[in-house]
Image (tube, rainbow, N blue to C red; front, side, top):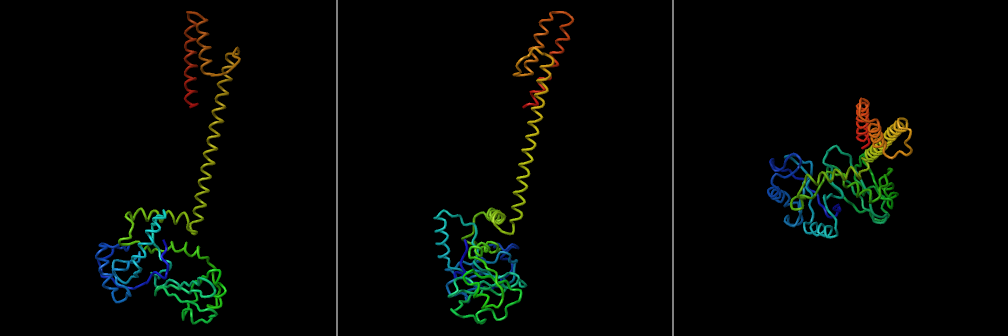
Length: 313
């Protein structure tokens, strides 16, 4: 689920040590909630009890960090509607979020239509949104000091307006692509009462989804598919070789049968037919010294037949 920018507010606070572990998880969610309400009481327009609060994912055990706030009832109703429609919400990501690194470049987006587009930019100082009035191409709407390395994106309907407004080339990005890129952030607003029960399973699911869908992992997916195809081709080739070897072995057994017993006209089960022919030869020779070599000869063929059957199956 992606929370739109209009539904979120961002606040910078400094937490006392001991409330968070290294990965940004709360040691005691209830205690963290109480501390956040006290720190944000003067910054929030609504009562803290009416808001859902979430801290940044990669926060340290103490120090300054970002906190996202949104209407608790709205978030709960939206999640209930998605769940009722048969969707499973594993993660709640913001549409835009401030950077957690001070040296990260500024990123700008111009979204909407050419008439009444919205300019949004985010950096380590926060998220800012401004409505671009119709026919306004002045640079006063944009940030006062736009860094030269800033990444600028615009939806197709307002790409020309973005170039006029910012005086630089922009990267055209469809809304669907932008929303898809929202899942690449470390932010997850599903905290506190909205946290998933099995965080480890959720993280594994997020990682699997990223590997399956993220454009950055497309070469790895192609390599994996190629590896699977090579493995399947190798198994098929090995099976073909095994069938050829088995066919050659059967032909050799049949040739031995036809050479040793030329009276055989039809070969159905070569080992069994050889055993019967040897037994018949031993019976026709009668008792005496010649019967013992026949018995050894029959034992030889029976052993060969058993070995052939074992290799055939």
